[in-house]
Image 1 (tube, one colour):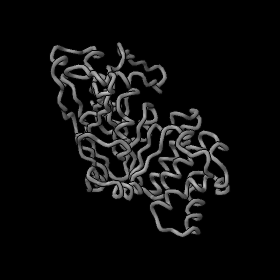
Image 2 (spheres, helix red, strand yellow):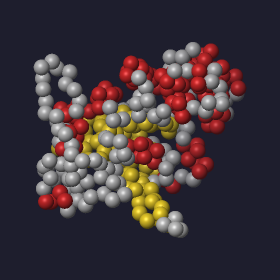
Image 3 (cartoon, helix red, strand yellow):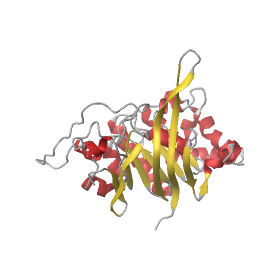
Length: 321
């Protein structure tokens, strides 16, 4: 068995709401609520769900770009919650992030060689010659010419910029990469190229991914395990093929019903969810999904469902189970 590289236990992140004449805290946005999962080495754990469900905040909190309010983040056997600023800076060499929008994640005033050199200068003691060699090697590994290092980010297409972002994340040879919707800002034709590149690099460099997306076709292609998030909570988790073959939570069933079937002539029921995602600053009592669930019972309106094991590695939180 693969050893767990990342374990998240009871992760919680609230953002204060300010108001009034004195700008006092009048409430909290409950962005992440009791999230727990493990990711084995060299595997891909995907988080899926609608916009605003807490996927990106979970990823940022794991890297402590947002400080968690509660819970534990255990990376390679070490609880990094108690790490100070300097310890966390050293740890980030091994934990990197690919952001959603390559237009915003690259400094337009810096040449590509400076963008790629910066993490090496921060986290290693390599000489200038060694850094130049690393930059050339990494650009070619992500499918770009080493000569591109003399250009600025605005001189590239969106797909090329995302390749540069990936190169920047991987140049320190991290063990864990959190990819926050890395293809959503790209054309469909380019998306598949970036996904295939990520999978190729995972095999070559033995990377572990936390992949955040709302595109279920992409998730099915790249993932080992999938966690389905709703209103800050993971409501179902399973190995990828198990989840797509036997979705158990009503929310998961609704999400998968929207994925077009690739089999000619095969039709499936399209489940239309009523209403919008509830306000995370004022979540409903009981099951967070009951306001939109066609199976909702009285119990769902008052009691938070517990996780139920359905098979090896497959669980869901629903009173129907």
